[in-house]
Length: 475
Ligand SMILES: [Zn+2]
Image (cartoon, rainbow, N blue to C red):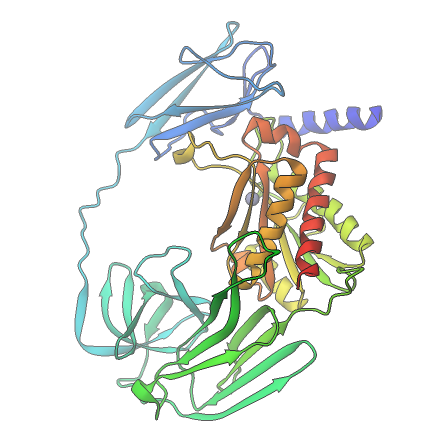
C-alpha cells in the first residue's frame, strides 16, 4: 500500500541520514568501505553501493557494472601503501584513499619446546577448548572443558601448551585458558560409580569420580543407507566417552561407547559440583506425521541487532533488520503449524552470542534456527560465491541443514552455496539440533534485491518451514 511505501521511504531517508554513506552529487552512495580513508590488510577489497541504473559510474576509469536494482559490487586490487581511487559519474568525483599496510613480520618463528618434567595446570574458565592442533581453527576442537580441570602439560608451542592425556594421546590448550595448579603431581582419579537412567526425553549417564578429570565425548558414525536421503549422510551410531587420568584402567584411560537407540537431538555433558560427570542425550521428539511441528519447541535467532548491524547491503539495508523480518515471518508460519516459538530477540536490541546460547539451553528447545544474510571479507572480494548456504557444527544437526538447504535452493531458486560445517558459537554450544542459515548474500546486488522484498522473505520462511517438516517426517 502506498502509505506504507511512503513510510518506508521516510524510514530509509532517516536511516540514510544516520548512516551518511559517502555520496556523489547525482546520488551514488558508497556503503563500503565505510570511510574514505580506511586501512585494509587484504590484497583486494570492493566498493559496494548504489547508483541509478541508467547512470554511468567509473572507479579509476573502469566502468562499474550497475545491477538493474541500482546495486553494485566492484572489486579492486590493493598495493602495499596508499591506494587512491577516484569514483566519478561525470558530474562529480569522490576520492578514497585506502592504506594497505606492510604484512606483519612473521620472523618470530616458533619451535616446539618439550619440558624436562611435566607441570600441572588447571583450566581457568568454562568452555575452554582442548584442540587437536596448536591453532585456534574452528573445527580442531576436541572438547570444551569446564573450569578447574587439571591438565598435565609437557611442552609448548607458540600460544599453546601441549597436554598429555594418555601415553600416546596429546592435545593442545591456549596458554590464556589455564593457570598453574598448586599440585606438583597428578594422582590418578578414582571412578566411584556409574549410573544410567532413561526418561521419556533423555538418556542420562552419570560417572561419579573423586575429582574432575579431562575427557572427550564424540559421536561415532556410520554412513546412512536410507535411500530417500539424497546426500552423503553420516548416521550417529553411538558416542565414545574417554575419561583421562583415571586409576585402574589401561593407561589410566577409561574408554566406553555409549549407545543411543534413536536419532539423538543433541546432548549436554558437564560436571556437577560434586564431581559427577553427567551426560544427557536428548531423544528425538515423537512426531505426529500429519502435524510434524505440533508441540515442538523452536528457538528463532535473528542474527545481530541494536548497534551491531551485521552486513550492510549495496542498497543500504542492514542485515539485522532483514534477519528479523524473516524470523518474524517464519515465527508466524511455525506457530500456524503448531510449534511453540521462542525468539532470542523480540526487537532491535543487541544480544551477545553467549546470551543466545544460554537462552536455548535454559528453554531446553528442540530446534534452534539462526537466521542471517551473508557477506564476504575483503580478501574474497573477487569470489563468485552467491546464494543460500546452511551451516551446522554438531553431527546431529547435519541432516536438518541439508533438508533446509535443499528447499532454499529449489523453492527460492537461489544459487546453491552449499551446506558447510562451521564452528559458529550459536550452533556449536546450543546442545540441540541447531543450524545457521545464510539466506543470501546481502552485498551481492542479485541477491540483495530479493532479500529486501517482503514477498521473497515470506517464500524464504516457507522454504525453511518445508525443510524442517521434511526433516521431521523422516525421523
Ligand atoms: Zn550475520
